Image 1 (cartoon, helix red, strand yellow):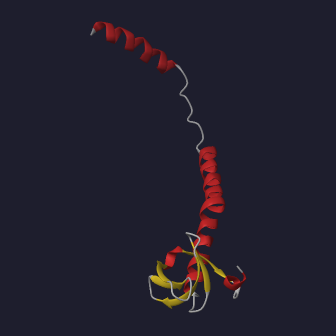
Image 2 (tube, rainbow, N blue to C red):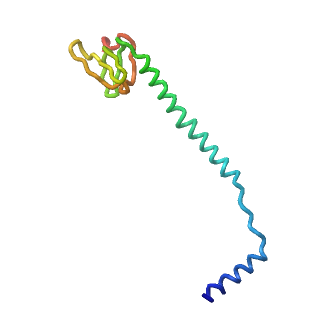
Image 3 (cartoon, helix red, strand yellow):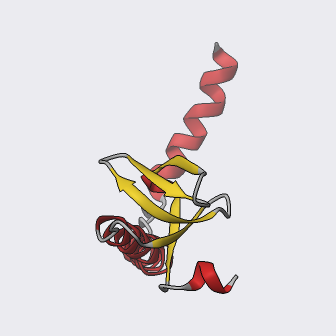
Length: 115
């Protein structure tokens, strides 16, 4: 115990005579966080939100007879629409049901005949 007190007392006496240390400014740290926030917003969040909005608008605008591509690469013509699913005609006798979210693009009319 005496050993510990002998070590702490000189350190405390030396600190009394010394000038107090100044705290570093927080302004550069806050500025860097703000810059990183703007970079994150403009390079990551904003473009992704725009893509999601465009995809939702495309799905809302789908109509019977549109030619579409699924995320699996299947091409077909929309035969029936429901809230969550779309029935796609691949040929005259083959129809499949896919989730609406799996549609990645709407093709111009007549694309299926030209392929």
